[in-house]
Length: 79
Image (cartoon, rainbow, N blue to C red; front, side):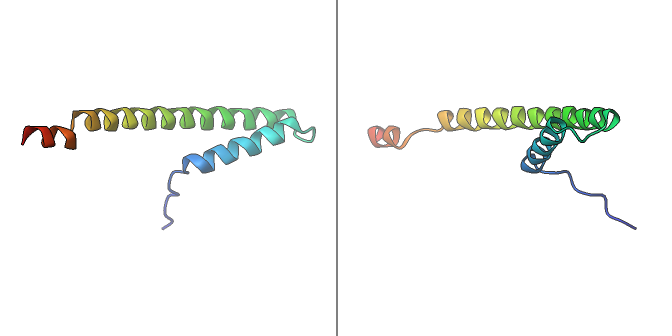
């Protein structure tokens, strides 16, 4: 039984997008291969955008938690 490959990392997907762009800029790829590469690139781009949006949301949530924490200065003034 073979293990299903884990999801590629953001960095791996970005690297593959760069490879696809280089291939599409070249002249040695057939029309059919170009279309397949373009489709792969679109799917990778969507995944990267989704990951960036999730990261932004996580950072926003963490900053909100940080702002809700009492600062050490508040503790000093309360004594």
